[in-house]
Image (cartoon, rainbow, N blue to C red):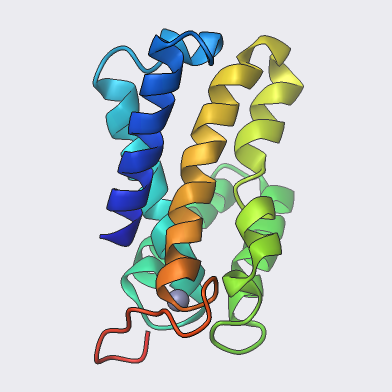
Length: 162
Ligand SMILES: [Zn+2]
């Protein structure tokens, strides 16, 4: 819910800026409803991601995705990629809950492939991917905020300990 609100504010802000001509490149991608809806989904996914280190909705989603992807990679003979994915998928549970996945460095670095990977193939796509990256960072930030990592003493915790 925090990610929905924070990403919603971000999308609204970007739409406002682009309609005022401040973010020229964002204008045509924020025009319809499909891209803003996609940005919202991305924000929510990255808002759930930090709890991948514990038993949570985020863990179910991301380990499920990693598992299916790994099966596809192995079935198609891409063993090297499968090995790297397996290694990456292990990293969140190395360490304790609210460890590195709940850090500002992770907030900036984890969504970075959104910008870097498309850029390696097509430099022209950079303005679009930066808007998408922003939504991911904002969603991630909302998690750290509600976990009490941003403002000391401000946290929204459910009765469960996640
Ligand atoms: Zn958390």
